[in-house]
Length: 397
Image 1 (cartoon, rainbow, N blue to C red):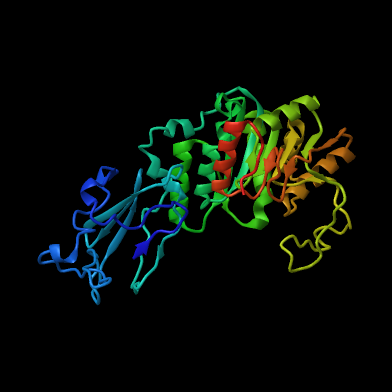
Image 2: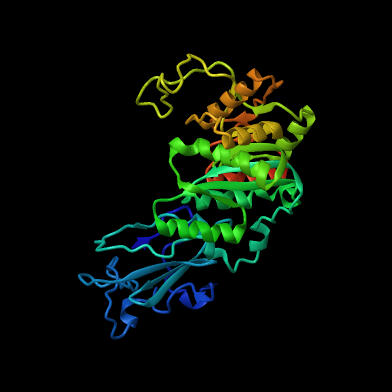
């Protein structure tokens, strides 16, 4: 039997003998009228029935042993539809809370030999075009001349549509985001696959919340995304504070916003989970390896962990100016780079306020969080539903 395995959660066969009472999925009957009927009642069928059990005729099976069959799985608004050799066989409704964008993998299991597989039209931004709540997920344009209290820039990659949709469904629904007090934008580099880039641009047009950057995404270039957030937050818009986070982080926007406001610091602010006692990794096999040529000192200046930190507007403006005047020293660890830049400003006379918040969790989720890192889309949906239901910052594992 062919099945889909991706977290949707649906029954992968028709109920025997009950197809006449089947419900509809996307205006298609859940089961073909033949599926589930006994072998003896199927006249002139070119397909074999399944194996007999206990001497009794088994139910109809849409494949014939030893013959090639073409099976199509189509992802639609309400569920998944299966055809065999052009004939609609069965449809599966999504489990409550699941949507087309959850689908990322297909598994073929059972006594089959897979000759070839073609993936085309898998869930993308266009699959929700007819969704009734699409307008709820769109970001409103920021009016010219409007000052933002907070810009949140999210690091994402072109093929992380599923994560972006989870954020649109959850913490981008905070009132402060919906009313325009806080703006949220994804900062995404290009992909090496042109079709992925096409889908990315379609998604950007549809939702209005993506800044497509003119370089191919590589880990060693992520500091350029930090720079892009600073440029966007001071050139394209004017934000009093700028936050950087990742597309696998759940952010309690209201708590971040109110915490920053309560500090009453408009200049020289670096707020986050501050690390004041760390140095470069000298193991060349480490993901965070830094050579002595890149950073000769044994210690870094204070820096804030990447899943969630905030800087004041003056810091972002200075970074922008330094970049335009070729004074900005790039460093491949983007969160450490921000700490280095802020330290340079401090040496230049800027009074810097380092404000640490232990509720920013960089290695997962703990109760009372204001930022929870490494959250899968399902976790985000669960956390959001829990917040709405209980108003408590609880985790979903």
